[in-house]
Image (cartoon, rainbow, N blue to C red):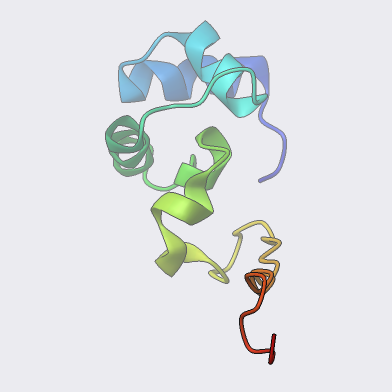
Length: 92
């Protein structure tokens, strides 16, 4: 997302019917917007504010959005295999 001015942030907060300081805190990662509210804000702002702008854990909640144009890259490390139990898979 390109940076938004304080004036635009205030206008978007007004459109989305949320407190401007709350929006600022969500945009800067100080707070995380609830999933339902993030979807509502995205719709209310016509997509100017996307779910990934206000939810740090957006990829866990909406994995179908990964890779969409404008979506931030997501690190998806492969889970490591669990260590075998003692004696498991070996002739003890």
